[in-house]
Amino acid sequence: MTLRRVDQVEIVILADNFSDLLLPECRCVVRPPLARHGVISTDTLLAEHGLCLMITVSVNKESHTILLDAGYSNVTVPHNLNYLDLTFENLEAVVLSHGHMDHTGSLKEVLELAGSGTRLIVHPDAFSSRSLHLPTGDVLKFPEFPTREQLSEWGGDIIENKKPLLIGDDTILVTGEVARTTSFEKGMPGTKIMHDNEFETDTFTDDQSLVMDLADKGLVIISGCAHAGIVNSIEYARDLAGQRKVHAVIGGFHLSGPAMAPNVEPTIEKLKQIGMDVICPMHCTGFDIISRLSKELPESFIQSSVGSKILLQ
Image (cartoon, rainbow, N blue to C red; front, side, top):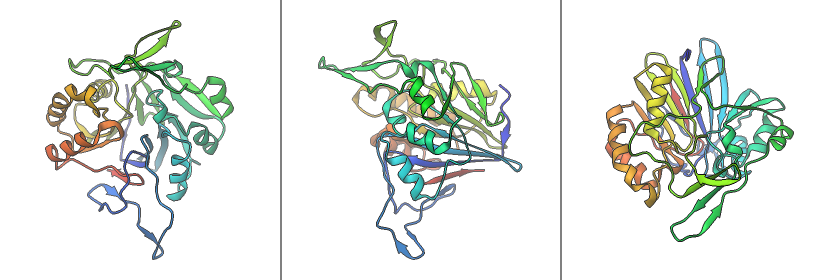
């Protein structure tokens, strides 16, 4: 893939699991102000178990803005967008990392705010019914993904992708289906997906990430949940971009909970070997694992918080 190098990548966190208005700014992170014009607001940023990132890449005098995912509820993303005095006026596309409800909740509001004809990039498996089968024998049904007709009514121009796709005038790479190469990343136990009117093991073929090539720094890799495995996602991004150096890894790593415990140690070891300059675990990574990463990779670690702006240049 001929991925154009960019001079800057800006990531605004519109939805994530964590909010802390007292976090200090650090080397590449601008935190939202506690007060405006000397007055602390009675309103605040909202956090939820979901993810939404607004990403802007710049090269020369050219810039492209896209959205990765749309949070869990239909409240948080529009509220935080307004709180931060941002708009979707220049939004070129919405990319869905996969079809789970904590990444699609504000799709209707996002598409309506972005305006009719906004490209919505989604793997076709996102439209399939899904369920979670617990060790107790209980079966939990995932909320249904919006239909193609609904998405079109909301103003989305649907682009279904399985293969890698370049957007933003070739400055952003959507990976499509991620190749599985590690021995330990085996997805989310107990999940099933409907294919040909039957439920089968969900291998999360719809899981995809974003890749950018930051000039003189290396790859910036942004995941939604990394159900394909964050290490698999990094290695596939390297292969697609033809670039081994990784500058930043940002997003959900899906290591939370006892079912994912076997993945924790090998994932941390692999991340340490990759040696990125910036690591910002979010969302489904899990508090314990985020704490571990802050200690294992102290020079690279950044604490995510809603409203923060990560500026890579």
